[in-house]
Image 1 (cartoon, helix red, strand yellow):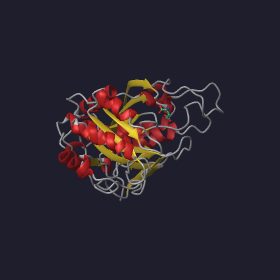
Image 2 (cartoon, protein in one colour):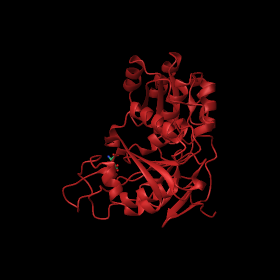
Image 3 (tube, rainbow, N blue to C red):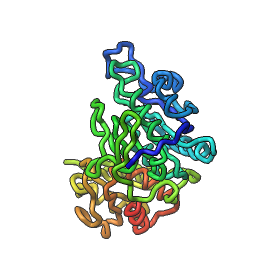
Image 4 (cartoon, protein in one colour):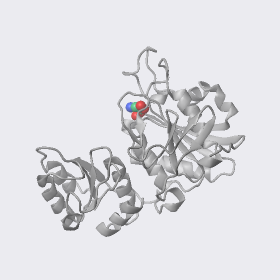
Length: 335
Ligand code: ASP
């Protein structure tokens, strides 16, 4: 596919922090730095080539380590993106973010941004002060993708280490490697290199303008519980006692659940708590009525969503008043 360049594209870069804005006292240090301290202007200054790709409008939305991301900040970010994309003088958005929760934010935006214009998240594994920092090239590539007509209607994208991933599929797979992001099983959507952008496939599930979710209703409490050898039901009982509206199980293997937890979940569903079974494995799908009887348990299978993304979708579904197990399953089968 030939890249179609939007000449003089106007791209808003929204900075939220992360290692891309990280600072260490020593350039040889790629661990033990402070994330989210370098401002967006400095990040842009480090990439003079950006001026040949787009006119940049920059905003500092937050300055956090993304391990501390909150649902309130997700909502503020989504609302700001929607407001900017409604303007005729903005052609696309780039969000700089920490890598730790990038996949959760990306999927939240994938379901709540209401525009066909490109939204591209990027990040870095090495702080801005490091030798061979990966942030500047990732930022240039993200703006390059956001400036392309061929990036429209693709949903929210993640540009990282020369690859372009769909927000739905991508996950962090390494603690320190610069090729930390993968889309297990389905692979990247395409690539970006030296100003050239090529998509090799498209995301097939509905997103953005086709998704019925928005940021109007408050997100209900949904927690994640892992299943493992010797697991106790204490966490599930505590969450239910605390008034949680949904629980996502990070099950073993194909979404199987320790018998002790299964009993606790059965008790939880009887009290109206929505339960979704996902897998802690990192790839593959969880079949409805596969490793556990969802019909008997009143639960829902997460399909190919990992536990963290299943939590995002469950929160949005419950906020949209999708509360019956059959309707929640339909939602998971669709998005
Ligand atoms: N802890 C950092 C963050 O998520 C890690 C990174 O950005 O690579 O903000």
